[in-house]
Length: 276
Image (cartoon, rainbow, N blue to C red; front, side, top):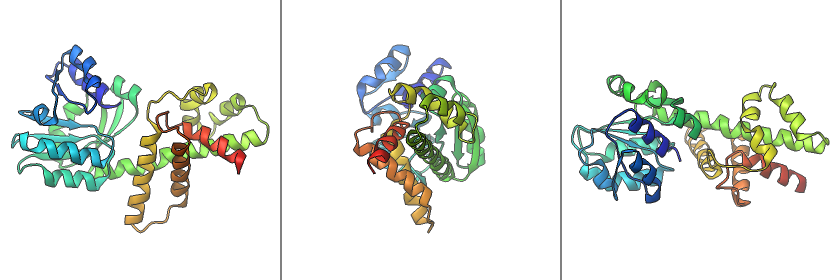
């Protein structure tokens, strides 16, 4: 979902853009807008000065980059904007040919922010490379160098631990409100003025309508919650709140909400709480 608006931003800036997607139909609007569409990642990256990847998980990044590496120019730059964790980014850097420079640049924001160019970008890589690509990244939003290679991906895991946690807390708050016979609209308006206000405000309409049109799919939220658990374990940390959020997202996926917006976890929590 995010790759298309990011590519569209580059096209609208006047840059020559080559695109490839595992689902070929998704490149048609970009092709109509002026991009050159390819049928394989091998052909797409050939001759490219800068390669940008936005993929769903570490396995997808490994598969696509493994297929594409032989076509990379020796002076190419690869910016990975996926949320995949630092290990996947470091593996990418080991996978590409010598001379290719790799940086991680995951983003905070969803489709509306990608479309508007107001994403927050966490750059992990050398300072001179950051300076070289900062103008390009400005097409997408505001970028911040957070450290060396892998630190952008690590930062995104920290950020997403709060996103899945806050959405789970909102779900439990609304479940409590249900138990106390409070009106959902009224309580959401109250919560908008509370410490969880940004989360309540951004998802209020979806919750009230019951139509969780995806801006960020719940299945990806579960993937991110799993990354949080994985990297916490590697660091020897016990994070019970994050673990509880992971469990809620897992239950929501099992209920069939994976292709809905990640705020559909609220629906799952309200349903499951009544049954427990």
